[in-house]
Image (cartoon, rainbow, N blue to C red; front, top):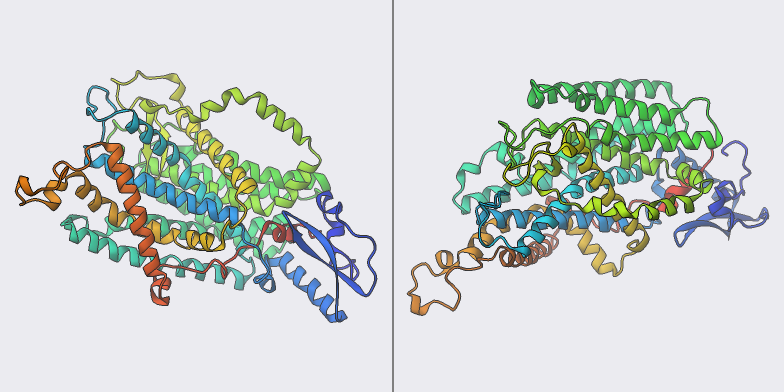
Length: 567
């Protein structure tokens, strides 16, 4: 395209059939045709150009996008991916709901799974909330990592200045919020008289872990991302390829060594160790696919993305989880061997999200030549199995740090006997299948029905407030739960009974009532905190707040124009 196309050629004329339906006739020399977004697709509109140099500048700008990603000159023209914004905000809201429920459970002694030990106030409303939170925990954090990978593909340039800028932005958007959250953590624990929690590991492994963990994953996986983009666009730079391959190989080796020494030790989990190097290098091989052209090239690119997603089963879903009855693997033990499986899972999801956006144009061309209706009919005919992806499996369900999974033995033998269905790695694989079902369903729903700001004011502040909501909500829920659950001790400790307000003694003694009261109050206080933090530049910077208008990833139509440029 760069060599052969005339200056005034229409880029959309070389696009797939989806754009050709809007392809204009031959253009006169006095008219330059530029792509623009109409609805959800791209079309060509003719625009008078003032000079030859203006047209040349447009083509040079497109060439720059083709090589390194979205052009700086397009920054002010990009339409936000609103459906991605809403998905990120929903994930944070899910986290808040889960934390509020787990804090509620702590107030009632934790609700054991053994039916003979459950308290009398474990009723149907309590079970509904427990099931809902368990279901959300399967896909909330995985969805956030998948979306983060997708956005990395949208925003990161793969030339040296672009990579350095990306690293700098990750650091600046991680360290200040983490530092601010750590300060609040210390203040909150000290105010509640829990000085024993004021240790480095307690702070690092608090809910703030997500900030630094995501930044580390994004930075360490840059060499893979550079290689993937190089292969997808068939712009092979031998020197850069060799350097990135070497760095990525070292990172894979370090991941295996560190996880083996720190967590696996004597555990025999070879698939967890092989997952990162095998999945990434085989995906890169499929993306490269030397010698392929046309439809075969598209199929190989799509296969590379699909293989990364399927690797979540092939490697993270093979081995049995360490059971709650084993030493060091209790329900709430983070630093156990199970953590390796959770880390591998979210890393593979992040890379799947990155590749999904990189290979969008290839996937569109493959789908255009495939009977999509046949796939839809097959999914509908198999709808009898849809309920399987909502089955609770309470006797075998267990926490795995930031996700949920299934272990081979029941968490309490009184509740259920052992079952072959969860043995030999089938339990974790089933958990991953449930995760994928809900992640895909939510993304498809968001893309189809939530790709709009609704109200600009609402979108701007819901999106911007997500990081503040995530950081501060944990500094409210514990103290509020104690106050709501035991009002007599907290508020009217020394007041005579005759002077106490009605209902003061005992507080909210139903778990569901305490949960909803806690949830509403925590959301209210967290949004109020956002209003205060957003009110001046210093606190905005301290919590990593960026205006959504200044931090807009390219829209689908912009990314399609990048990927559709022929090589």
